[in-house]
Length: 158
Image (tube, rainbow, N blue to C red; front, side, top):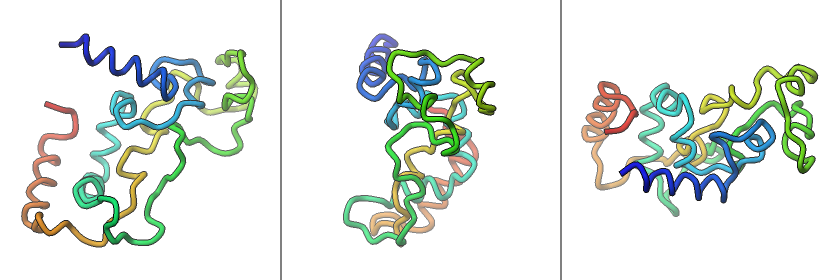
């Protein structure tokens, strides 16, 4: 059972960059993938914080749907989005060097590789535009029921 999941995550980490176990440079160079994001610490908490908006975007969005202009919060394909003042040397521009806690402190970076989690990586729902309305197949009452269930149970899985 667990073997298949590990294999999928391993191949995704190779393809998108190691956002789960890499050093700081590897993590900052990783590209977004929703399955890798959902394995980061605090991912469920980030969805739960604004669960109604998260669920609305997830259920209502599809290519071609009318959306509120300018509402895709994060269009960047990087997994972790940090302050642009973070030196490029720590963002993976120098090949072959490993960053360390010392590197982070030297540039007054408030976080290091082990501290990067979903709080620094916008989730899937923040990367898609906000549709103008629910889809025809979902009533407001249905949607409110889903929101209440996620409010009651959270986003931690089955």
